[in-house]
Length: 317
Image (cartoon, rainbow, N blue to C red; front, side, top):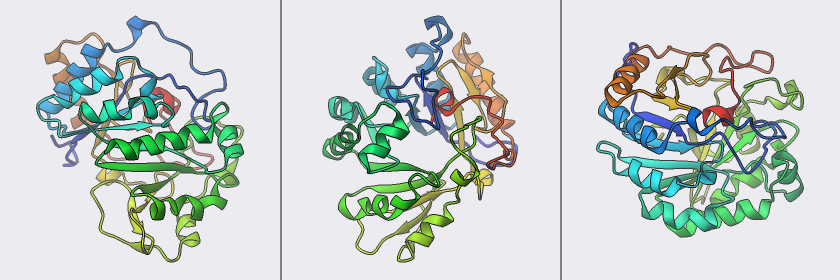
């Protein structure tokens, strides 16, 4: 389906939970999230009904997100059902990787073809600091599990934070030399007030190219990342710049939160509930929301915050 600006919307990001087993400082409060009742959240059947409605309107790619999607007890069956929906050609998942040693092979077996693993640093003390309760060894074990499970593609997402990991750009990029992975640097997004992150934390992706002058452009793959490759690398370097150079004109996605709110734009306040709707109502609502998808979000910067009204864990990373 195309929206009012003639963009083909074929990608849905489905958050299956707002809970997480880590407490990353740019994503979640230290105490975690206020737990909602079971009745407030989408059921598995409602999630699949939403995927079916999306597929009937031209959604072909589905990404499962959170919070941390792997903490959801029924994640394997949910992914299995989603992968079988007529019209869905690709099911991917974004995870911090901590639970992949136990779940990677099961996810691959039921049809998950791609995994994005969040990894902002390769230094154990800094990983513990940014996640508050995580260990780097657990994340690296998750990376190994993803590679061994045989996914079609494994990508590493690193949020670029000035004064925290901008001194690790070369080290993180070098993972593409060691492993068949893409490493994507993502600009820190000003979602809500983050007293820990001042203006110096918001640095553009151009800083990556300054540190990697040997990286050369490669053909794009249809995603939002600008792609480069180091000489001799097995994978690409991706630059995702929602702040310094938004890519709204090419946006092809919608998002559905775990509590059933359909968001046509990550950084806009608009969200429409699908909770409690039957299949026909879901399709009709989704069709209307897709068509009315805004052309772009408001300006973002260290001082101009997102209008989303939620943290990333509540929307879906």
